[in-house]
Amino acid sequence: MVAGKSPLTGTWGDSNCGGYFGPEIKKCGFDAILIKGKANGPKYVAIIDDEKLILDATDLWGLDVVQTEERLTEKHGKVQVASIGQAGENISLISGIVNDKARIAGRSGFGAVMGSKKLKAIILKGNRKIPIADKETLNNHAKEYNQGINDNTSGMIYIFKTLGTSAGNTFMAQSGDTPIKNWGGTSKQDFPGVKLNKISGMEIDKYKQKAYGCFSCPTRCGAIMKVPEVGLEETHRPEYETCANFGSMLLNDDLMSIFTINDLCNRAGIDTISAGTTVAFTIECYENGIISKDETDGLELNWGNSPAIIKLVKKIINREGIGDVLADGVKVASEKIGKGSDKYAIHSMGQELGMHSSKFYKSMGATFAFDPTPGRHTTPTLDFSTAGPMAKPNGLFEGFSLPEGFKKSGDERSEAEKLVVGIWQSLNSLGLCEFMGSFQKYPLLQIMKAVVGWNITIDELVKIGIRIQTLRQAFTLREGIDIINNKLPERAVGIDYLADYKGYCKKMGWNPENGYPLEETLTDLNIDFVIEDLY
Image (cartoon, rainbow, N blue to C red; front, side, top):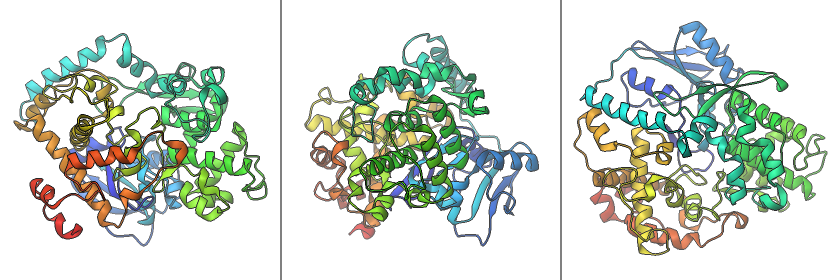
């Protein structure tokens, strides 16, 4: 998890990714690493066997993240690397931080923060043994849980193991979940099954060499691919969000171009959600005569023109020509271009929206608009989080159930939203994968006790998560963000999301008129030090 103030939105920012870098922090003896200040030239931080160093990175500056990781492992041996590519070096506000060559903490623009600090990479190699309170019990729970995953030969678990998130490329679009044509079209009319099938998870799976999984994962929903048609000997499978952004959003059914763009963005360290939405914005501006061929550096930016799309992505990464205008996302680009282009800029407070429609998942509208990290589909939202076992009483965690009427508007739905936010923020703080909510019952309390020896309850975990969410909210408000008056682009919403949010605020103990946590709420959550900042 990377956290700080987002240069993209001015709000609290956080972004996470899988892989092996996170556990290595713990092996180095830390829970977190805080980076302060700014270097006078390119540097990288190395923590190797208890030795902490700040080293010269001049020879790394300009390399992509794959080249950087390979260069650093050649020099230091087997280390875990988190680095920025050219997009972060160029202070692109839609750039991220990459580990394991292609696992990217892409949202909130933290690649730009590292780039501004002249920090090319952090490398870790720990020698600490992580203490476990009850190793035998932990192993027993892990074996039992993993056995359930391994024995599953149908349903969501099997699909994830086989196709990963790309399984959603077709059915999510056909169901109305996936945004089409910069949120302005429909699958049936603009990108029907005959086109969707060309970029399906099954088509992508033909290029799979082996499964890829994050640290200790039994599901292994990632994959290493080989795509000789475009000269890729080793690349990571494009995720659903990437395929949706550079496929359905752009009416592009050229799978080879999606492989190419995915590899380009991973290596450069740029968020594919923001980059794809920015390309869609540019195409719509071009097709509506707001920008001309002269302003696009000669590119014919029409829907589905994959060669031109690839060239535009490269320009954005390198801040070349029109790419310099687009490298900070659609909000900044529309402000620079003007001429009414803002109506094609689909974002929330500057962050491009995730590829899940709030017309399909009704609670997503309030989440996109008002969460302290706006525009995010991975922050807790009721309908999205209850697509799996959590919808059933005690279905995901023993002792955790939602009110029976949570699917209907009203008090019970607002209470359910609060409960989901509470438990999910606790899960984020524990470093657990969000996809476990799609699989099977998880022995959460038993595992926590086995690892750290805590006798903690579900209610206590929910309260901890509410404390986390309230701190995120307070940070964003302190920075001067007028959350309650934020509005989403009309084509991206389908409900009265403000009414939903006000009901949620009441349950959270926040003022529904401005989103401010009440003083008594801050005191009850034991974060009364925030009162001085807000009041």
